[in-house]
Image 1: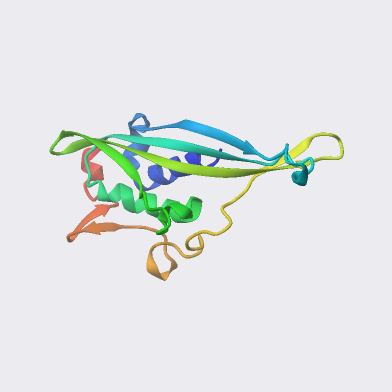
Image 2: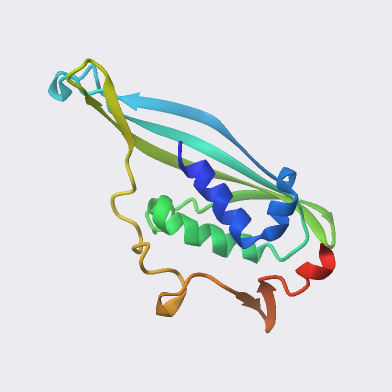
Length: 172
């Protein structure tokens, strides 16, 4: 599965505190299912399948505004699971927060994800397997969430810069 690793990399790229303390970012998969139509005569010998699963992401001891997590997550989802961002997904993104103090929280979110795997039979009897990319991103990866084509470099809230963290050097 590619999506958990991709999301972890995105979160650690934007939030250096998670790179310094990787134990604060935990992920696991629950309620996974493998869906294959090999028994369908119309599919022939096709052993391609889809993985459907719920990825639980927990960020512990978060001391910055939770709004930062959501904008980074939405930017990642627009490419990797765009259906979660459409009006057809009436549920929204579910999360929980354990408010440890006024300045610290453990944040948990459940992401229903899917990954298609193409299995192509080889002449030697084996299979070539490939995880298929999302066919229709909400916006192409060449069009980042930031206007002008630049990567997400900074996030501000009410006039205060939050990413990159201007106090990161003091906290290290």
